[in-house]
Each structure stands twice: as C-alpha cells, then as structure tokens.
Length: 258
Image 1 (tube, rainbow, N blue to C red):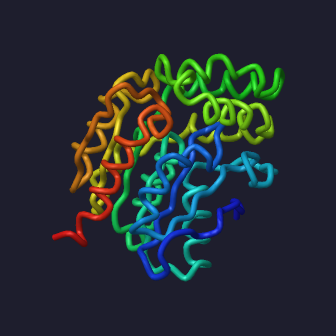
Image 2: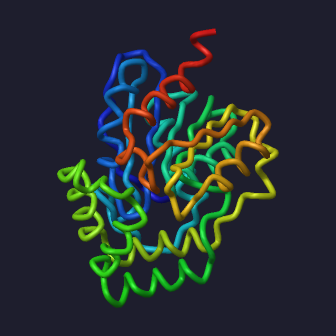
C-alpha cells in the first residue's frame, strides 16, 4: 500500500477529525490560509501526494483509488472511526473515491475545484511525459496560469511563490504517476452511490474544473450542493481563502448546529 506523509494533528483534542487533501504539484501548504479557521472546530491533518512535500517518491504505478485507501488507512492509525474530508483538485478526486470505497468512514466531504473526471486522458499522458523528460520545472508557467486568478500572485506573493517552488521540487516520476492516475480516473457512473453530504465548490475563473464539474457532482450524489467562489481560479484556497474557509466551516459544522 502507498504510504503518504501526514502533518501532525492540530486543533481541539476530541474534535472531529478533518483530513485535507492537496492539488497535484502542491503540498500541504495549499491549505495554509484556510486551515486556521477550520481548526477552531476540528482536529486537522493534511497529507502530501507521493513525491510531493514530505511524502516519499512513488516506486510503482497507482490509482486515485489507491490514494483513497492510503488516506483511510492513516485515519485508522489515528484511531478515527469517522472523518470529515476536504480536498482540492486531485485531493478532491481522492475524496470522491473515499466516499465510494469507505462510505462508513466519511461523514461529509468538501470537494473543491475538482470533478468526477478531470481533463482528458491524452492531456494527462502528455503532461506525464513532459515531467519525465523536462522535469516539473517545465510546468511552472502553465501551472501558475491555471492555478491563480489574475492579481493573486501579487496579492499573495509568499504563498504563491512557495507553491511554485513546491512544484519545482516535486519528484518528476511521482508527478508523472499522478498524471497517469488522473488519466484513468472517472467515477461519473458511481456518483449516485455516494450517501454522505457533499459540497462541490468551483472557482469562477477556474479553466480546469469549471462550474459544470461541480454541478455534476452535486446533482448526481444523493445529498449534494454546489457553490461558486468569486475571483478564484483552480487553487481557490489561495485566491479566496476567506470565502473558502467560510463555506467549508458552515458546511462541515452543519450537523452540529442543527
């Protein structure tokens, strides 16, 4: 089984465990501006993809489903019978697989800037080839254009800079294997099996997973809703952290407020 690196839990002891999943090419820092709000009512852990951040490089092919199983295994190691989950982009895809493969584990999930399928398989295969032959450094300009809304780099120079450095530092083959996992990922015909409440969030400037991706999730799961974030692109947690934090805080704590 894949082993992923998780941050140490933070937040109130005894609070519900909230697991935060990252976008391709980033690390746990993609949640840095949002996590403090969520940590007021949750015990939080965040994880890194293989070869990203603090996680070891991948040594074999894997599927998005395998990442979901690894997250579930770590939750069990932490002694959690149930978790709440929020993931962005590939981390959101992992969240949908978690809901499908471990339905008794996940109470509710926020799926941000993601989809039941993301992009086209041939596009992911081309990006995997670029990462292996030219390194992830060759992907920085294109990623910055997809990730951030206009003006976001100027507004958040430290965080956006660190995220682009995280991409540059990502293991090339592990990044490629993530691309290959996304090339075969497609849970569209299984969404109706998801029982837990799901909030599907899109960034209004996101060219990768637009409104239609979020609405497809919200419309097909049994208890779904969709929410757009203004002035946000693919990394909405960076472009509009306040709006994302409020949306997730309201959604994740909905049951306890009833």
